[in-house]
Image (cartoon, rainbow, N blue to C red):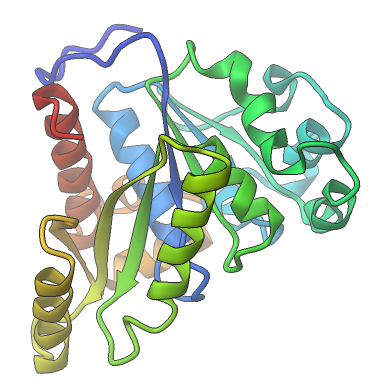
Length: 270
């Protein structure tokens, strides 16, 4: 698939990015679905892997449980060929490996496998030449599914809600990332911290954003995702925000985030 968006192309290998934060409600799945969709609109061949048993990224792209024959569980536990688990979506350049409730059992079943932290990376290895980006939507925990995602990834995006307890749990996640880097994936880096649910009318949001940018200088995306009704509504319609309301502030923010990431790649800043 050749793009003509003017941002240049990546190499022959996917950039695998985990979207992770063990704190719930910070916008992980919203980011996974809308970033993947925005990269696809920029004609980047993109695969979204739903690593969360809740399956919200799957339903958020309009793929319903009854349509799924094979999912991520089959890839991890039954060693199904990854290509057999891939679903198409409403966007030409976006594919999905879905999740169902079966994935809950994977945390337990992975425990007894050899090199259990590397199962996902091994399962995706045959896909890396087929996509420009592989986005891994992690569950809200630091269990084996998240560790598998961090071990498979090149980088991590950390969504961080602009609220009073924003920094809570962040240090634990960064320690986990360092541990995975030291023991399992030496090349793992932080792609960036993404400020989400930003309300420009709220002074606290500005204070949190300023504090995070000061504390993690150079590691925070310029793009900020606002608190946006359309962004909240779109999953219930099984659509990313850009297909639900492309002119909404939420959709525009994720399109801008995709541009920011692609510029980094082209300029060699990643």
